[in-house]
Image 1 (cartoon, rainbow, N blue to C red):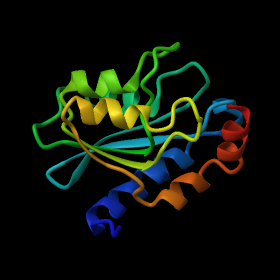
Image 2 (image 1 turned 90 degrees about the horizontal axis):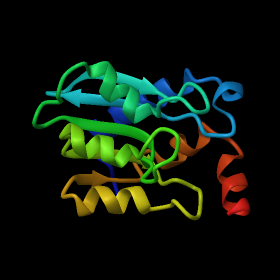
Image 3 (image 1 turned 90 degrees about the vertical axis):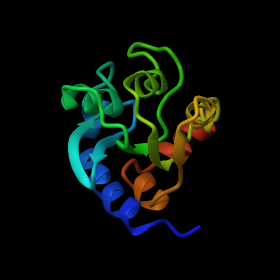
Image 4 (image 1 turned 180 degrees about the vertical axis):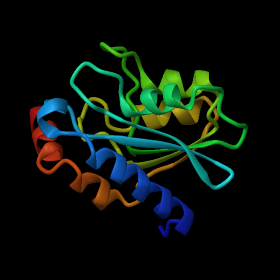
Length: 152
């Protein structure tokens, strides 16, 4: 499916944000970047910085410093988590913040999580587009997909 140019443009920004993370600090988790866009402008950025720290989506929401606008779109390089671990489910944070549009680069490669975040967001009534610049988003974390898929 052809992605709208706007989605590709902003996903490239999220990929750039993810690339600022340092693999040795995020390990064993992947590098993930997120941006929030309102009215065609990037208004907030976030990235996963260290194991146990806030995920990219939560950091972007916190960095916004206010409630997102009604037409805000969250762009994230990897599917938001939907489980309650050390940081809480990112899907919950997105829904609670009032984000209505989410664009995902690639699904979580972990077998037990793959597609779960997408399903939670859609069930909550959010507009979700996935697989935008999928290969580029996967290339941020070489080897991660194979490692996670084979260990699940």
